[in-house]
Image 1 (cartoon, rainbow, N blue to C red):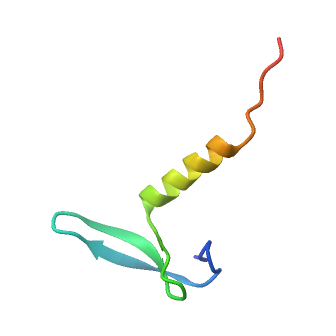
Image 2: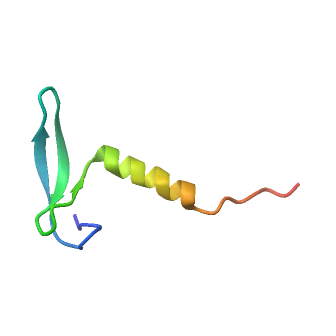
Length: 57
């Protein structure tokens, strides 16, 4: 996978909190982390910025 920030190589890494264990992609060059929540939020944000087409009647 290619990092969207620096175009570097990303590796799948295991992250854990006190109660939560999840996997995310981490860039080995810049340290950017991309997980399912981050990618879903970016997709929604980009969709909201896209021009809305209005159907003519």
